[in-house]
Structure formats: C-alpha cells, structure tokens
Amino acid sequence: MGAMSYQSAGVDYEPLDAFKRLCQSAAATTVGALKSHGLTEPAGIRGESAYILETPDSYLAHVEEGLGTKNLIADEMLRLTGKSYYSNIGIDTVATIVNDLITVGALPISVAMHAAVGDAAWFTDAVSADLANGFAAACRQAGAVWGGGETPALRDMVNPGTIILAGSAVGRITPKSNRITDRLQNGDAIILLASSGVHTNGLTLCRRIAQNLPNGYLTKIDDGRSFGEALLDASLIYVNFITTAQRINLPLHYAVHLTGHGWRKLMRAAGRFTYRLTELRPPPPIFNFLIRSGPVDAREAYATFNMGVGFAVFVSAADAERCIGCAKSAGYDAWVGGTVIKDGNRKAVEIIPLGLTYEADTLNLR
Image (cartoon, rainbow, N blue to C red):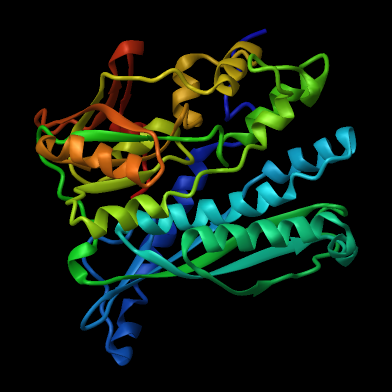
C-alpha cells in the first residue's frame, strides 16, 4: 500500500486556501465601516491568525475557529469503551480558538461556542454535560469568560447523532506595545513549544488510518495506550506563555500556532525568510505510530501534523534562553529549534535533520 496523505483522506488545502484569499479580498472592501465607530484596521493584518481593530488606547482582536472532526473519534471511543472524552473535546475547541488569538498578542476576554447538531436530542445525552464542563474549564485556563454561543439544530444538514463544534473569541492588547507584529530579523531564534499530541489538526487522516488497523481505535500504540485514547489527549492552551512574556517585557518578533499545514506554518509571516530547523525533539509516540501505520512519509507528516510542536515564537538570539525560561516558568516545555535566515528573496522551511524543505508555494494563506 502506498503512503497516505491528508489530501487522499479527503482534505485538500488548495481550494480551502484559495477561498480564504478570496474572502480576504472581499472583506477588505468593508473596512470603511470602521470609521463611524472611531476604529481603524492596522496595515497588514489580513492573513494573520487573528483580526485586529485599533482603538485610541489599545487593540481589540477577534477569531473564529472550528474544532474539525476530532469529536467523531470521541463518539467512536464512547461506543467502544463506554467512556466519554467530551470534556477533552471542550478543551480542544477553546484551545484552537484562543491559541490563534494570542499569536497577535491579544489576551482572551470572551469566548463563545457554536454547536450545530442534526437532532436537538443530542443535547439530552450525558456527554453534553462533559462538553460544557470541559469548555468552561478551558475558558478559565485561558483567563476568559464564556460569554454565550449558538446551538442550531440543522436537520438534514448535520448527521443525526453528530455535533459540529466551533466558536469565536474577543481579546485585547494593552498597552499597544504588547502587540506581536512581523519584526523578524536575520539570525532570530525559533523557539518551539511542545504539544501534548495531535491537538486538532490532521484528524481526518487519523480517522482514515484507524480504518486500516486490525483493532481500529483500540489498537495499542508504543506507550501502551489505545490509538483512540492517544488521539483524544486534550490540546494545550498557550495563553499563559504569552501572558508571562508580556509581564516580563520579552520582545516577541512573531508567533505561530501550529495547526493546519503543520510545520509549513512556521513561514506564515509575510516577510521573505528561510526558517532553518536544526534541533528536533522526539515527537510523542502517537506520531511515530501514525507514520508507521499509515504509512505516512515524513514529508507528509510534517506538512500535516504538529509533530510535537504546538506553538512557536521568534525572538532575537540574545533573548533565546530568556524565552525558554519564560516558557518553562509558565508550565511549557520549550527549546531553540533553529534560526531565521535572510537568503535573498527566498522563503522556505528547512528541517535539516530530516532533509525536508517546504518552499513558499506550499503555504498560500495571503
């Protein structure tokens, strides 16, 4: 059997990203509406992970994000084991939202849930309480209030017995100097913050791999747990790292939440730089299992999964050790993964130990 890919599993980023770029162009025609509110849009914000509005004394930020298909694995594990993982699903939903918000330096204020079902009876199931409790716990961890949401019953649009989870968040940057903008420079250090596992990206491919396993989600991986249990580890929320960095006035030149597009996301900034990764950590056991069982080749794995890195920031080389200390004091494992290189007009991610290179044309988000 040939190697598997995210595209062969049913997710093709090319049309998705093309639509995002189309929306950015259309959305830019609406900016004039801000004037009547006394607000402005900072230059260059379109295409970043969070949208920013500028007020006279601060910035406001907004994000809309979706969980993806991870809850389908929770549904199947409930059927197989009788155990609910929906508390973790609630955490995952908040994490995918607020981890995008903090990439611009915004701290979450309010988070809202969007929970669409095919049948309103879903909300009477016992797992609905686990979902609510996990969502609330994640909001507390992010320092945000759960401000509301929407619970549409979309009969004939959403499969019965299934829930589609998404949400939004509003954050604030104050003082304005806490905003994280693209200030990348030649020689900057790439600081990688460890993930807890797959988080919320690449789950469609994970579900496809499960179909080929003799025991499906109950197949044991290298750490002795079942495949399904390992996939459902809750995502890490990195708000406390950004909060701590702001408290100690650590200058961050850019920040990236590694979700869709895997390590290609490291070149999300608009500038033309080469991101040279030289120091890799062994990824959590779930990733080695995915690569072996797919099979999934290394190029596809690092282009789809986070491979043990959930968040990355870029700082001057002189601030690298201070940044690692900041991350560790905030409760995260972190290390210097590589260096930002100015190589003419080239833009690429190079993972030197694996001989992998992703050129600029593999990430088209703007």
